[in-house]
Length: 283
Image 1 (tube, rainbow, N blue to C red):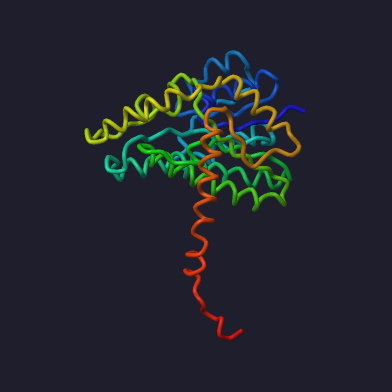
Image 2 (cartoon, rainbow, N blue to C red):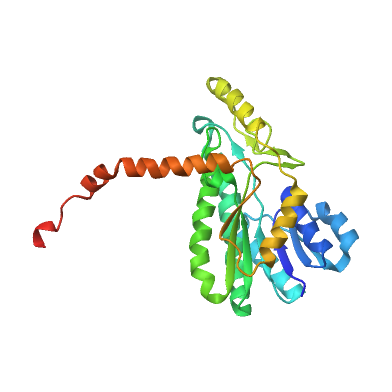
């Protein structure tokens, strides 16, 4: 049986490839974008199989209405893909309050609004799969990307909690953690050429150059291949809670996690001291 998808951020990049992959195999998609004009080619190619919806995910009421329209139009919702987002780049010293608020409004709160809108329908069905696009940036942190990292780390925690809350209703949750992919907006992440840039402070120019050199060595993935991988995830009877898309960051993540475990182990004596002896005298 074909699946019914609801995908945010469908106008370009990975989101667009996800929509095209689903439609090309006979699934139906409620595709959202800030402007439905960006979806005209999909409508021309796939007709009634695609429902174009204008949506700014920062608008909670609009998110609720879009999910409602999609469910009413197709009769059910099988796969919810929270894909909309962007990368705010800049050193912490360069970021404004508005930069931080805008980043979280889109990447974090936008995802929350869509999840909250979809859950009643998925619970009633007793089935559904929520796909959250995170990033390798949700598993480690690098300089010049703190705003983006904050939003993605928050999504990791949000969806880990969500998975435990909704498992009893037959709802699955998978967090996709892509590395760099060759999308139309450029190789992502690239702190100099991708996302929104804060006003640069020259004191960080050297760091920017070094980081750009490092990221330039990461292999860029094929978005079309990522879309085919996502189809396997949504077709799986036992999908993972988390999965990396791409290979470039895996060795780095192995080292990051090994270092964290070693640090905690090295400082266990201090951790025990920090616990103290309260209540010991009563035993």
